[in-house]
Image (cartoon, rainbow, N blue to C red; front, side, top):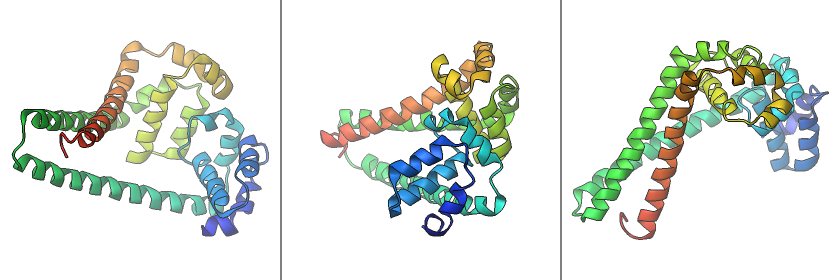
Length: 236
């Protein structure tokens, strides 16, 4: 909030060629939530971004030369948010484990035990997918990125996100997203990467996409089964 109140204009003045920053300023306005949203956008341009934001590559080019004394006002809230999300995830896992132990210790019919078994399977598959992605990000990422040398965003992520666990995971996530994009979107966001993606080896494409889909299906399956089970009183 401090950054949104006292540093926002100074940060936005740096983005001269970016249409994304100027349009966002007009759309979200100058209210407290709007200013926070504008700070969040600048944080995305200097860190992990969304798919839609790729359509304005000039904003990222300007963000790469963003002054360090201003960048810290964006990085600190981002770090606090990541720590909070990590803490929330750990608490969720702990409460889920407690709930599972309590549920299993009670008498249950076959349908309830089947639902619990499927929930555990989804959780284990999701965890395995995350571990596989972490392994790939440390031992295969350089090879994957070398095949996308012409991509501005791959090179940008390597420079900006760094080689930490979080940075490597984000870099891998972006590559997995790029492999799913259609040519029309790539031609507007990262046109020089189109030939590299077309020549991307099928074996490595599967290596990136399979854990990604495993994680997505596991999360969706877990959430749907858990909600439906509680809704119909099966595991409630």
